[in-house]
Image 1 (cartoon, one colour):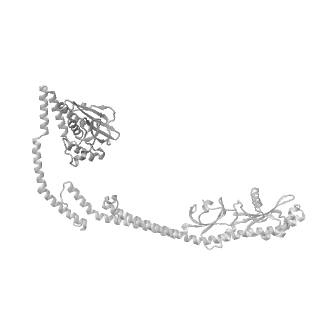
Image 2: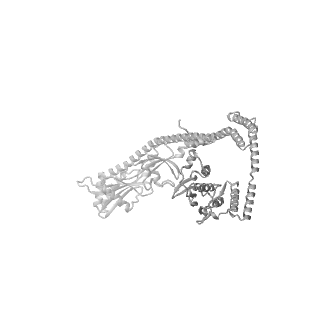
Length: 596
């Protein structure tokens, strides 16, 4: 079985329990919501299956009624008496006796084929006096010249076939027209055009009454406008009632969410679409109610689970926190045992609290019997040693030597005493971290003593003043300088050279001490750690400095060693830290550092 990730292992027990409960609740809620979504989807498909049958009835009925208009126009144009009368109208003067008889005959034929699905029939023909027209119906308002030109052009492109066109009017009507051809002649001669204005609104209303379903809306649309109802719907565009890809959809419109089913009318060369619309909220009201109740139930169950888990976790961890508090007090040296409440649970944590109290009592007794006694003895010995070697006594003694040396005119002895006193004072201070500037002051005191001792010692410094205020662990540079002086004297030379560098490099301060002694093993620290090489002089000091730097500043700050150009170098890096030193590129001489 795979182990849990590290971050989970490191998480506190309370966090683990809360996380587990949260994951379980999330999985349960997700599965429940997914199931409900599938239920809603199934309901939508069932609703579509029920309305698709009704839409099919609508479509069949509408196409049937529109086909009747197509056939009626065909019957009119091939009617023998209509053709003969039209020929007379074309060849006769307008108000001649024969023309009047033919006009009455044409109107009789038009009256015979007229139905409630039509608004009017229009006949357009050319006579000796110009183009004439005959209308029959409840409204004989002619179409515009542009509309007629467009309609006649489509008829000429399809001789003898019915042509459908949107009338462009706001009365729920469409146009169907045919080119009238002479049927009794060898050469099919064009006699004129027959135009029907079909009452699409009346047909749609008539078809709607044949369906038993209630609370629905029927819409017939072109890509640009509503054919039916002619006034459209409030705040709804025609494209919102159309779809070229889907058979049904749920859409939010200006009148609320609607459940829509789509079908195309079988009209040649026209993109007329029929849509049946239901108020989705009304149909889905029971499902929405159940949805609300279901969601509220889930939320209530989640809240109840969270509250119950919180109470459970609080009860479990109350004694755990008590135990942690006892451990913290013991860690601080407080071994007082607080009485356990009578109402405390007797579960595993309760037993741990009781066992810890017993252990604390026994531990305190053991400390009182052995550790405290030994501590008193150690403190007594330390006090005795402290009395023997009192720093103030040493300072006063060195000051006396300094005064006597100056009185006797011994400047070198005075300098050594003065430098040693300052070096001892800075070394025994209680500061753990000091500035580089102060550390260089300690180094200068040490160098002054060594230069008096070894007059061939040449010390050079390259110090960046912008790094002087950066803090470093006390006694970090001085041991390196001391080790370099001792290391360079392993060879007999006329003079001994030592270079001390402090440079700022963006985010780091680089500190290096170089000497012209023999080459050094760059892996000396590894050899000192595994005891393959015994330390000489300050060998242990190098390990101490390296360990402190790595612990405080990280692995990058550890000591490194180099042999280059006859010089042996040991150095380390110190981060600049959040409070950068004062900027400046000038260098200072460590020999001018304060060593009073």
